[in-house]
Image 1 (spheres, rainbow, N blue to C red):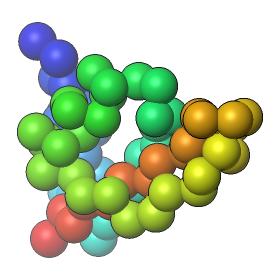
Image 2: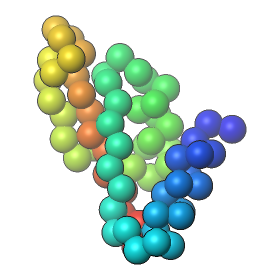
Image 3: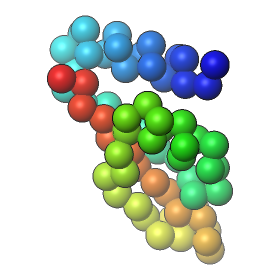
Image 4: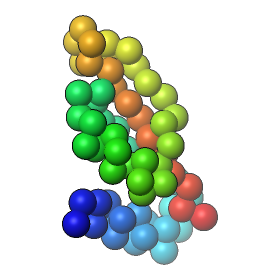
Length: 65
């Protein structure tokens, strides 16, 4: 099941007192983009052409509280 480890890790971090979790992916990875959105992450920042022409770095953030 996609996102199982991501979901489990976020749950553990929340229990351990973390308030937010941040993850990154590239614009060339639509599967990761969809998965993070489905898990409740929101885009917090996009760095255009950060990994090269047409390849953006996308930062996602999720509140654990």
